[in-house]
Length: 456
Ligand code: SF4
Ligand code: SF4
Image (tube, rainbow, N blue to C red; front, side, top):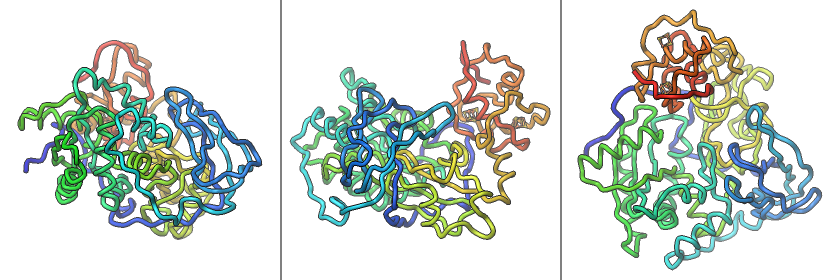
């Protein structure tokens, strides 16, 4: 079977400090959780509970209000002790609830009751997805039904791509979930496709995971009792950033041309999101926990953890056996996301969000190296360093969208941003390979551009 990939650029991304994706462990229940009332991109959901109130596990605590906000449920039973302000990103302040563990669990340890969905239409499925607060469980965390509405399935049926692509070692949580919840991912894909108005389901799978792809297709076909969908498996390369929307679209177009696949507008989602759809529709369960890849040089152990939403980063670090060697809280940097694309955590009290797929912690020894290597860890300076560019051209070689990061970066440095418009997908490849450690991606992504496309 042919392996498809994007045409040029990209890097081989390896990291020995990322956790192994072959296993996962269930975290101990946190004594308290911090539950933000909005996603990083979304507007605030409206609280429906108040301070001092006793909360049940899975109870609705804030209701989404229109586009870009989602229903939010309590991950644990307990008492709502405080309402606090929390800032997940500079310039963005969110309300959050602090809930202390108390009382008994309504869902944990109880048998799961299956609800059949075969007779539900797209509208009924979307209602359940909204009710149980399902959002895209990576990226910006947009409510799933908002994404469905933005895709035009009326003009032509959508092609739904389940992105089982693991080109980044920090996608270990996705990988682990995909293997452990294979049946749920396969059935969740069918449910999602019906809700979105998709006729074709494509499982895009890393070439090294052929067996996983075969098993997903078999499980999906077994569950498609209506015979309403067509299924395709596409094996894709593992060069980073293969899992980006840009690279996946390239792959689908190439595959369609070669294999004659007729496709409509594309909808791409991760296995974690699809499994959350399964939970909402089949189990009628809200998103209360997620798989998180926890690693980094400063930790004793590195592992994939099933953690309750709202657990603090320090809880996850405790699950990994704490800090390694002489590292301590005052001398580490914690960050959320991939080392190429993540964001620094303000403190170890930051909560796990529905979108937190990985957390990594660098030790004091590596702090300076990490600051140099991953420039997004520090606030970008108004005066970017330019003198150290040695014009090696490495950044051009790896850019998958044929940009000239060196030139764009220099233009930004001299304040000439009005004449360029970047198609940058923010993959971070240029920054990862730059021998001068210039904050290329960081600068390009954060600078507003105008006018025409700029490409070499
Ligand atoms: S990789 Fe870095 S040093 Fe090399 S040309 Fe690009 S910006 Fe300059
Ligand atoms: S310029 Fe943008 S798209 Fe190109 S390598 Fe850098 S981050 Fe990726």
